[in-house]
Structure formats: structure tokens, C-alpha cells
Length: 113
Image (cartoon, helix red, strand yellow):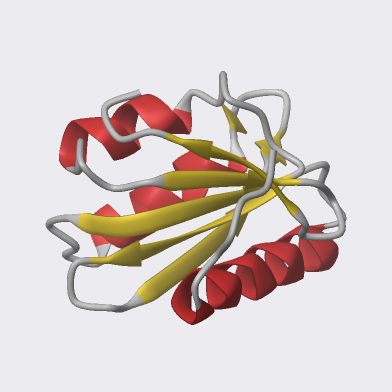
């Protein structure tokens, strides 16, 4: 499957890959809110807390006042990421993209998943 990303979504890939690398985590994610601001996150796994990269990015955006999303990118993530439910709850019409670890798009998850 060929997935083409626009310039703004490619920026999300760069941000997500950066978060993944900084945290030395298995996955990274980035979201763009309705105002065009971006937020990135990486997986968090401790004895008392487990969050996916997308959950981190979405929670960071929401706690910063975001009221909606334009798009999300999950680098080295999967279609069963628990953050997708929250992302879709807030913005059911916004697309989410999966990429491999190198940032090559592999799947576009349809709005409303």
C-alpha cells in the first residue's frame, strides 16, 4: 500500500522520530492540533505507569489546551495503539498514519477507525 503524506504530516514524522530517538523508546508519535501546534511523545513504561507514544502526545496536547486534532503519526506503532481511541474521540474525522521505524508511511487509518 502506498501512503502519501503532505508536507505538514511529514513534519509530524520528523517530530515523532525525534521523540523516539531521544527516549530510546520502541515507538514515537506526534499530533497536530486544530490550531496547527504540534506535540510529540514516546512510549513510557515504568513499574507504575504505561503509556503509548500516542497517548503521551495526545495527553500533552489536551493538557496544553488543544480542542481538536488535524492529524497524528505513529512511528513504529500499530493500529491497536490505545491512544487512537482518544484521538478519534476528540477528532473522529482526523487521519492517523502509521510508519515504520525509518518513518516510511505504511498505513493510513481512516477517520472514525
